[in-house]
Amino acid sequence: MFRFLSGFGSYCMLMGKVFAWPEKHSIYYRQTVKELVSLGLHSIGIVTIISFFMGAVITLQTAYNTENPIYPNYLIGLGARDSIILEFSSTIVALILAGKVGSNIASEIGTMRITEQIDALELMGVNSASYIILPKVVATVLFNPFLTLISIITGIMGGWLVGTSAGVITSQDYIYGIQYAFIPYYITYSLIKTVIFAFIITTVSAHQGYFVEGGSLEVGRASTKAVVYSSVTLLLFNVILTQLLLS
Amino acid sequence: MIRAENISKSFGDRKVLNDISAVFEPGKTNLIIGKSGSGKTVFLKCLVGLLDVDEGQIWYNDILFTGLDFKGRKEIRKQMGMLFQGSALFDSMSVEDNVRFPLDMFTSMSPEEKLERVNFCLDRVNIVNSNSLFPSELSGGMKKRVAIARAIVLKPRFLFCDEPNSGLDPKTSIVIDELIREITVELNMTTIINTHDMNSVMENGEKIVFIEEGEKCWEGNKNEILQSDCRILNDFVFANSLARQLKESSK
Ligand SMILES: Nc1ncnc2c1ncn2[C@@H]1O[C@H](COP(=O)(O)OP(=O)(O)OP(=O)(O)O)[C@@H](O)[C@H]1O
Ligand SMILES: [Mg+2]
Image (cartoon, rainbow over all chains, first blue to last red; front, side):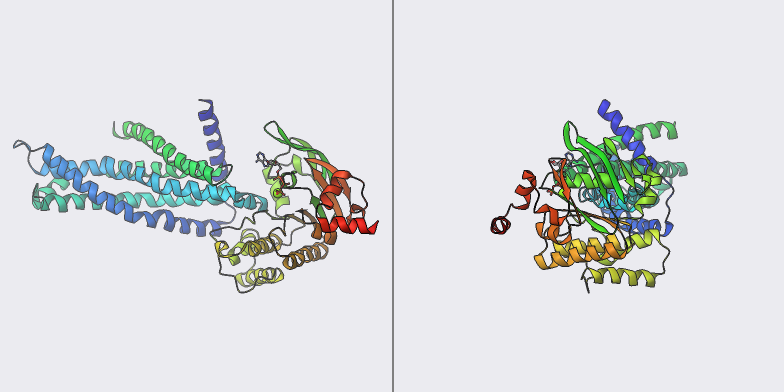
């Protein structure tokens, strides 16, 4: 409990430093563009692949679980659509990004710490926390909503492609289903979650990396912790946000 | 001028620095010597404020550095340059970008002026035609020299070097020593160098502070060091057989 509180305290203090007003905008801008590429663009591949297959599986499972003459077939499309939008493309994708982006951030910052690069920044009079972490936060918070949209689209396409070729649903039924009783707010809900999850993943992982002490062993440990802590925090917030936004 | 008064620092219950006082004057190369693990790096990091001291005061000219907050320190830090023991170059940037970084951050020079200054500094440390290499592509000694270039690019008033010539061949090592001495005089900097290289002690030692087990044992210059009766210092200075033989024969 004490460990948790002191960890939370140091997290809050770090955030205070991160969100200090940057002094050289051009440099922050340049860094943000760099992070957009390395944390955002480079995640498109994994998100697309996973979303495609998960969309396919969700469609098949929905189909096999509702093999009942009473249910019209288009409900399969509707069910797949809603699971993808509500839960899959925000939460599951965020968990996968916590693994990919979170460990990347923690080990990068941790290495900068143990090789004294952070000390070098501080010594020059640069706010190292803000210089290193702020661009990452801005980049992921801006870009992850696009990842979520990409995920929704490829997920639904995966469902359609595999569902129709496996013969569990016709193309018309599926397309009718994914349009049926569509609630646009669900997309908003999903994007709000994504933004908050992106913030959690980046800041929790950065916090783990920033305070590494020791050597490469500790950097490895920090990157594992970053994935675990950001996943758990994210799941906790998933419950809270769902209650707040959907009730 | 940098003045340290009664500095103490512990990690946990382990006392690493014990009541060290010293004055470092501008225009001189001040050396801190001592064997590995004696606390040189910790002392240097306390002086620049990367580590907080437990007790004692640090003065930069007339400013009490240990009494300043982050903002106040920042102003002084803009006048500091430091060479870290492990170079601490930014991995994600090329040599040129590393050296240019302080200029980007703190000046409003035009790109051409920056490039000229960067090349001038790289030239001074004998790094040529390597602007676009990354730190992982450099040898240890080259990293050191690029790090020195980065430390002096803003013409600092206070320069700190943690073992500038460890891992360098004797010739390059002398070049680096001379370079540091030259720019120290040229810019009237207060330079503090950590070293256990006796060669550069005898070349550069206008003021020497000897630290042993976290305590200051001896203080003087390169002429006095050979005559001192401090036993621990003699053990350190005459650790190698050549130096011992020279001392024997000079008696
Ligand atoms: N962050 C730290 N936590 C705990 N102990 C430390 C820390 N940094 C240094 N020490 C201890 O302080 C002592 C002095 O270390 P320091 O790095 O200053 O030695 P040094 O004189 O620079 O040695 P070298 O010449 O090998 O660089 C060492 O015994 C080291 O174990
Ligand atoms: Mg050292």
